[in-house]
Image (tube, rainbow, N blue to C red; front, side, top):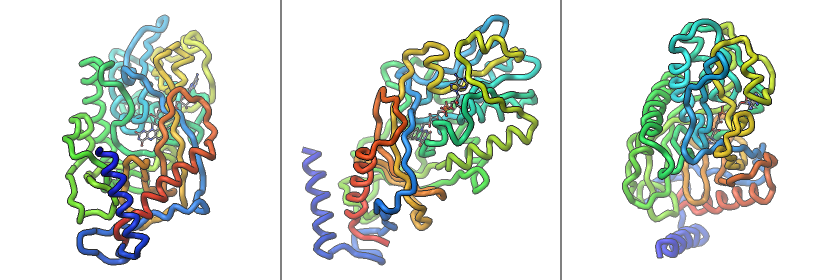
Length: 363
Ligand SMILES: Cc1cc2nc3c(=O)[nH]c(=O)nc-3n(C[C@H](O)[C@H](O)[C@H](O)COP(=O)(O)OP(=O)(O)OC[C@H]3O[C@@H](n4cnc5c(N)ncnc54)[C@H](O)[C@@H]3O)c2cc1C
């Protein structure tokens, strides 16, 4: 029934638009305009597919022995690796540095490896990153960059101890990202509109949704029955990872290109503390069969600087960034291919085109 009502509502919005009733360029009675994203296929500047490193029982931050070394894991963040990066890296570094002396090895140069390396340096220890690939050739470069827990655990599979790690990591991350606001690291706050069902939001999401409020129909232009708005931060991932890499090097860190095939390869490193930040690579390297890819495909449109809001709903999600307008919305479990599929990209474009052409009024 709800679905039917929603469809009828959308159809009514489109009909109003087609019959010329939609208002353009001014605030209409009963509708607050926003700039519309121009979803013309000729504006697509790139398409990508990335693999979210998902575990039903959540990310792994744990210390264990590797021969005579300490090994600390920091991987498996699903669709929320940017969000949790500073936080779980902080937990991993705290676990590793207890009683440690001397240089530290970090494996991986995605967002986890780079934030871990920075925190190791800031604690006063020399660091070497060993990695199979560098930015921009990491999953982290593909992320949309919304600071929001999403798609990183199954409620029934996590423990209270993990929940405590989740809370501590999210709090630390959010505080750290606030210190990096601005162009240098590509971090900014944006209002985010979300298709809502009017139900109270789960507390674990509200930790990253500020000023959350259900909106009246007159407060937005979307042809949706129920919309809420909140504030959160967005990270332009390419710029952020490039700056972190520069920071690691500027502080005397070393980066070596190297792929590890087995834990024994890690045991042969000279550092007595190894922090594993290999993301989906941990499945093969450490035999973690719970870790699976959840593929996401994205279409990036040419930038539209006047669009200064994000929106998520059944049609997918739109995050505006300085490097382009990012459109996404696929979640494909156990798919390993990182080649974007034209049919999926066409679907993303079509659903967003329908969504934005359904605006009841536009700026
Ligand atoms: C489409 C899409 C949208 C997303 N949107 C968001 C979002 O809006 N917000 C958010 O918070 N998150 C988002 N994510 C999730 C986020 O991208 C991931 O959780 C995050 O990138 C994981 O970071 P990582 O450093 O663990 O892994 P990676 O970025 O994959 O880095 C792993 C590193 O380890 C190296 N490595 C792997 N195996 C080995 C090995 N055997 N030897 C040596 N090195 C190795 C790799 O070369 C790489 O450098 C999104 C992901 C996708 C795909």
